[in-house]
Length: 216
Ligand SMILES: NC(=O)c1ccc[n+]([C@@H]2O[C@H](COP(=O)([O-])OP(=O)(O)OC[C@H]3O[C@@H](n4cnc5c(N)ncnc54)[C@H](O)[C@@H]3O)[C@@H](O)[C@H]2O)c1
Image (cartoon, rainbow, N blue to C red; front, side, top):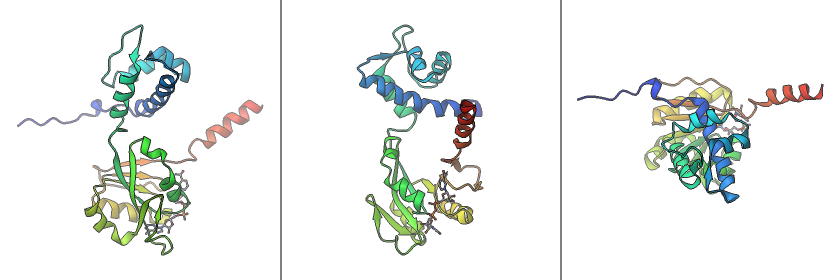
């Protein structure tokens, strides 16, 4: 039996994966303006990224465009959405319904990007048993049981930093395969588990620095 081993080289580069959703949003805007075809040069003008870079990024996506006319806009949107995993809903559990966790539960935008938080966990008696934006909040102790009930493989981590690792271990032991980590803690996980660290503050220093530069 021959097994196909996925090589590192088969992986789409992370910068490409970060740019593709951006192209997608802009292409959708162009569609709203009534365009039927879009070229990498046009996208380039909108978002100020080199057209050759855009063409290269789009080459990872299975779509062919005609050199001068460009890509059919509907087909490109469809292919990009499915390539990026935005069309099939990924179900997630969220841990820690505090100020950030609650904001994420209220955010309907996640849906458009393929993420559906189906339930949340907390230990605060004022929250447990309630629901927020239609999403039930259970006690953390009920997590293992709920894993059997829901078809979930993603965990969103918005708990206090001092329990970030403990809750991660709990999620992984329960069968979670990917952790979207909002805590500033660098959580450790087994090799087969995906971790995505996200910080709202990450780009603030860049903005402040550029602001100071422009004001000089
Ligand atoms: N990545 C970012 O941009 C960003 C932004 C804000 C906050 N954060 C981080 O997110 C985390 C939460 O911040 P916050 O301001 O929402 O805090 P918060 O104190 O408002 O919320 C934390 C919640 O976790 C709950 N909790 C405590 N123990 C728990 C357990 N065992 N199981 C489940 N839930 C439990 C608490 O009851 C509370 O509701 C912190 O680690 C913070 O540093 C990150």
